[in-house]
Image (cartoon, rainbow, N blue to C red; front, side, top):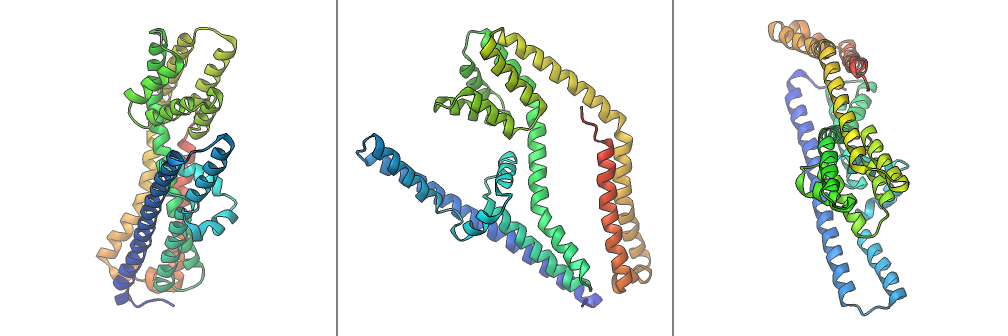
Length: 332
């Protein structure tokens, strides 16, 4: 089933309305759940402060309060989330992207956008394959959004990381302990590097071993530089040596790698420009031809073979763009 040409604007507006409604409801739901989580934490602190507890009873009541606080989060989605095998990977991805979404909210937005895009594909184009492609495209949008935020945050961390290492080295030379140097980074440097080192510092304050804190940071920030830093600090604490000198060498190595990376970006600029041009040129030419001769281009939208060719061409465009990006993405 396909719509007449005059019904397209209404169908597109309906699709946009459904998509915005899904996203808005998901954000409102997440805000309500965040308010419930804050209220549950406040109640836990209040009950713990008012209770006259012994050692063993304190642990039992604290565990009960924590379980009670966790039960407020997306209660009706918990059975679905519990059966989802990749929920830990999704939660890890959300944390790396600095998003406060829960796994249930992510799945809710993914399913809602998939349904919205699927309805749009069903009303706008005939056949069974095109609506399925629309469903896949809509459902993948939240994932690509989170991946984009994660990539951007990690790239920003990578730029700030040498400065953090230098500041830590200067702090150690001034006679401060390693924990004090972590606190200085958390207070003096901007996000996201300050957030990661603040978490390590606060975990140290609450008694978590330094090895576990640093390994957790290396897991949250999957960079070779972070692993080198963590490995160097842990080896120095076991075997001794000048930590400040080690940090200076790490900072120098990272900055030299940045220089090589910038040179590679210059060398691959032509390939990136070619990829952008090949991605935009067919769309621009299609818009121009539709403006000049609508009857000539209307075959692609009104005939089933034309719609199939249009969808196949779009898929090839996306695949070609990612292939070019993979070719020019040189890892150093």
